[in-house]
Length: 266
Image (cartoon, rainbow, N blue to C red; front, side, top):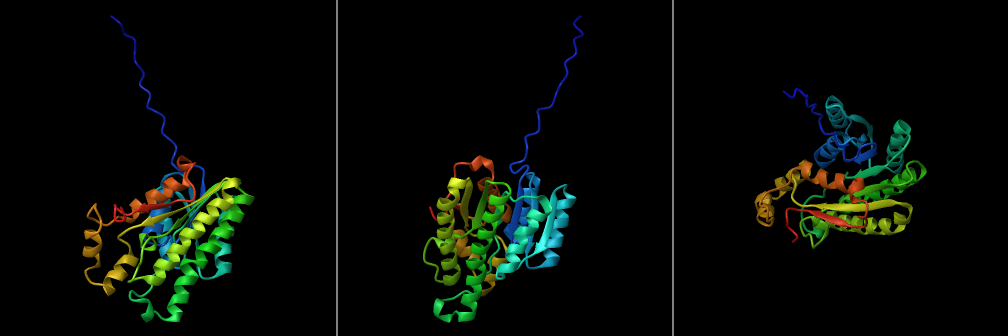
């Protein structure tokens, strides 16, 4: 009788998509940013969450830690240049480097035609959604260059930037400008090994879209009808696209604006 024993060994666990990376996520207190922070940590990154609201940041940070991830947070106002630079510096101070960044933070305008938008509201959308992204990219490139040497940045845009946007004209304009900044940065910093991409989400179930719907009854029905998958995205689905673009698995992808829209712009 053959009594040879067979020893079963489990397959090695694959490392996370972002294993070993130090990540900064803006707008991380809720919605897509919070989903991204949780996902990046699950995929092995050490994450610094940045946003304006301390209470929200603390809650997401604790959730990440409870799940075994590494996370810290810093209060950051994207309209304040010093605050943006301080957030990037904090990531380097905590972990000695910055590898990747997801510039997700944004604000929305009151829905309606451009002639009904006040100058103050236009300036607010500009200062957060465009100037804030520019400030963050400049600080992030500087930090990546000085520490990790190479890395990746993803900016959160919108499919509303890819066509006329009569309900959110200033928001769409700033996001379209973000697309241009993304492409210019990709060309500028690609030779150094710093990749820069953007994602353009479609209808996503966030507080921002719900605020828009409150001003525009029936919005979800209209957006769903225009989406071939016939539903809205969960924030986690948008975060997955950002994670891939920030990972080494997209190592030959730069300068793209990736639609994550359920086919709405097909």
